Amino acid sequence: MLASKPVYKYLADIVFPNTCAFCGNVIKWDNILCEKCAEDIPDTFEGLIRIENTDGAVGVFYYESDIIGLIYKLKHGDAVFNFAELSAGMIAERLLARKIADSIDIVTAVPMHISKKIIRGRDQAELLGRFVADKLGKPTNFHLLGRKKDSTEQHKLEREERQSHAEEVYTALPKHRDISGKTVLICDDVITTGSTIRACAAQLKSMGAKKVYACSAAVSAVYKDRGDDILP
Ligand SMILES: [Zn+2]
Image 1: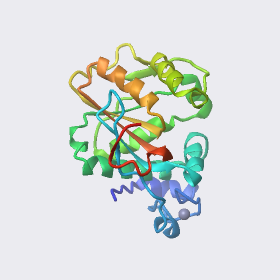
Image 2: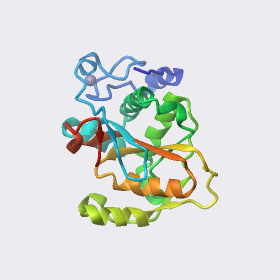
Image 3: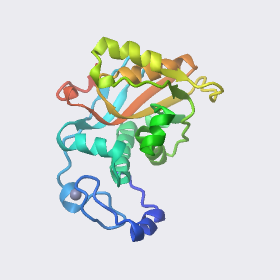
């Protein structure tokens, strides 16, 4: 597995003890998982999801059982860096194995509305994007897409409603960097129906991106047993 053990972690460990990405037990400063969890990693997703407007999406864990709690923690809880780093390392492995990694020019993330970001004090998709970019040695740009203010809960919408809703919500930011001819990797915490990624990728392509790949820490459990090259 790709690993990075920056010294800031050692220094941070003096104030905030390092904890296992899964169970939260205190671990050595340069580890991500405790020994028990490292031997008992849940089943992971190995396929490539074919989402319209993208050139494919990879993900790591299935959005089920303990992973639901970890994704919730990524959005709202403390001590989220190890889970984000673990997921990012496994995303990077998948992108390298599929020979996608080298082609990526820019890493970005599904945007969160600024008001939500202020309330939460973080942006989990951007956090994941930063770790993925670090693992791949690629530049980030989180000022490509914007999100209109919107109080609709995506998961409460029907599939078709989700798509038209997502298309209205994500926009190209004015004065964004020119991405003509570039290959962009867009990160999100979870991929379920793919409607968010589809809408964001449509924007990135209309902004000139040559290729758009997507990645997430978790994917819906409906993608289990669907083979290697699957449609959402
Ligand atoms: Zn553990």
